[in-house]
Image (cartoon, rainbow, N blue to C red; front, side, top):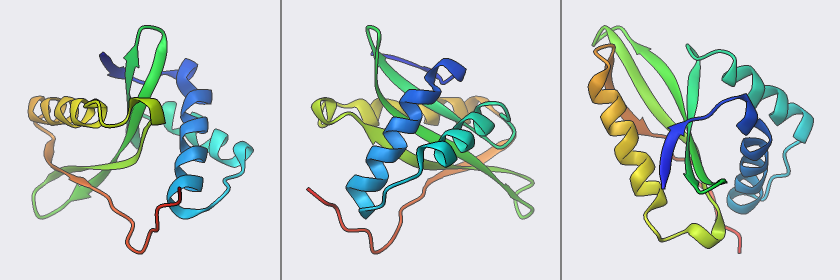
Length: 128
């Protein structure tokens, strides 16, 4: 499995992952044009955040989004892990763990990062 920052060529995959995640976790149908514009906007604005993808051969099998939050108390950025998605046939195979460890390493190498946190939506019911 290869871990890397997402680029513009990953936009459609990330849109699909976001749509699938919203439907699976919250029963929400995202508008592809709106989420597509959002994904492409973020990919073009690294100061706002970035996606990391896990890839097996030519297939992106998982992704997560990092957004940044400035902390005046710590004079640094918190990285928030959001929009985590792993293809169903790749779940329980260590994909998220690998993505998490990769983020942990990236954060440790960046002196502007004071910590990272996982964003969890409360009250979400998982749909089968």
